[in-house]
Length: 285
Image (cartoon, rainbow, N blue to C red; front, side):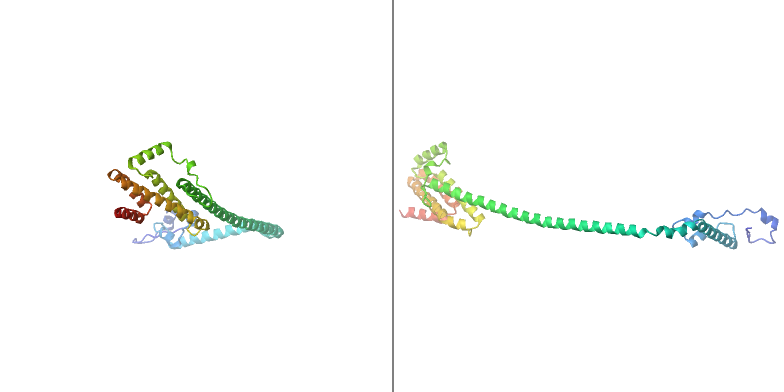
């Protein structure tokens, strides 16, 4: 029976009056199952519960005894299953060993696959490197062929023979009929033997060959072997420029425009010193 204490009053409460007082409800089991259950915090929430501390202790003690009894009943109910649990586990070593052997075999298989993948990766990387090297050699070969082709074209247009090959300037189709007509009109107007437009194209092509040779490398055996041809082509162009400049200067006032063009070609050809020599020779005359 729960008892209640009312302070401040006189006398005592009879047993009949105590039986008429309401009993506090039992503490719900769900309160003790909360994940964040904390005993001091939980007890502090019971301050408004009309129950003495001794009665609360008694209730909790009874609740503990009831739980112990439930646990004992649960163990007794499943006692046979607990006893048979060990025997059920007997003989499982073979199955575990089979699983372990299977896992080891799978692991070895995975390691073999990894090894083959690594080997193939190294092989593919080597092949890619070979492909890059071959691509570089192909690009280099194309550049070398272009140098030879452009040098041959320049030699043909300049009527310069190289390595026993006869000049074939008359077969050069790089000049159109309209350009030839313009060249003849220009030559008639200035009296010059060489045309500025042709010289400009020759200089541009020669500079392209020189730049292409520099991109390959001046020390490359093929480029070294072609130095004599490139020097011969450059000197021939300078000779034609000199002849054209002298012819244009000899015309007088009518040739000033062409003289300016030719001096610009000298500048593009990075041959300013050669132009200065020609101009000095003209002044000495």
